[in-house]
Length: 148
Image (cartoon, rainbow, N blue to C red; front, side):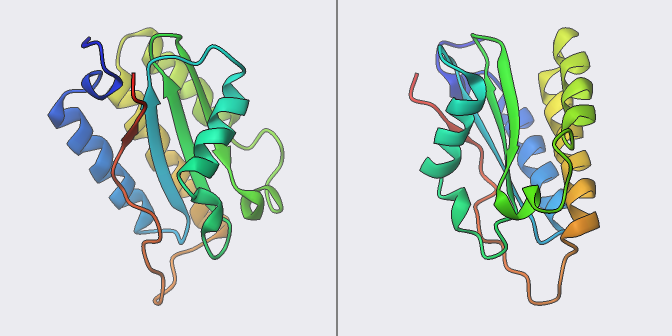
């Protein structure tokens, strides 16, 4: 693993993760982003919420964006959704996806865990936010990285 968060995944892994986001968003009007950084010394949900706002994910028309956040050196991750999602889903909505991610991560299969989580997130979102003919991609599909 390189020292910078952007070096955690190979170029091919990054391309595969980006493609998984694009594929997942074909079935839903929801938006999915992945943010990777090295350190998260504080509460992971607080940090993920901060990044969510920093990336302007709260500005989607239907408030249906999802952030998958990873702090690789601190071995923490979170999945958070915007207010539009929380209005229609139970509190434990992301639990099965997080458990599956954790199983992959424990085996060192980080890209596989993310790709499966992205696909499952897209399927979850499709239930409440199906893709419509006039949907536009409101957020970039590119991975974002912390500065460290």
